Amino acid sequence: NRNISAGVLGGATAIWILFELLGYHLLTFVCHGLIFSLGLLFLWSNASSFINKSPPRIPEVIIPEDLVVNIALSTRYEINRAFANLRQIALGRDIKKFLIVIAGLWLLSVLGSCCNFLTLVYIVFVVLHTVPILYEKYEDQIDSYGEKGWVEIKKQYAVLDAKVLSKVPRGPLKDKKH
Image: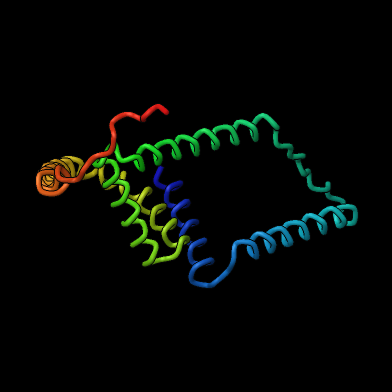
């Protein structure tokens, strides 16, 4: 839906401008929003008897315990899985995965040095909202460039493997039992 996507993208841009360009802080923004909302509701509740209007209906919000426990368990599972993957990479058994992780972390560090976290989140948000539309529109051209790029990456990796990686001593294939 174009209207909803445009609204979400416009809201994200407004938030980015508010926090990044104007120097507003998240905690300050939340506190000012709560002060404004509570003040408005307080005045409406007290003034409703004078102007013969019904007071605002404020729903009671209760977060179920099951939801919080499920979120905590899912988060714990994903963190443990990430630690297990990092352990496998650090043990030196898969050099290709090691190089991919190192390259990804290096790229992330370069991006992090160019802009702060909020700007990086905003860029990712904008890319996630625009790339799928562009891909649908130019799918055939993007796929052909992607295939050419993938073939070139495979060639470069084969050269790297032949000249460097094959000469690197590998660790033991199995964990030694003590």
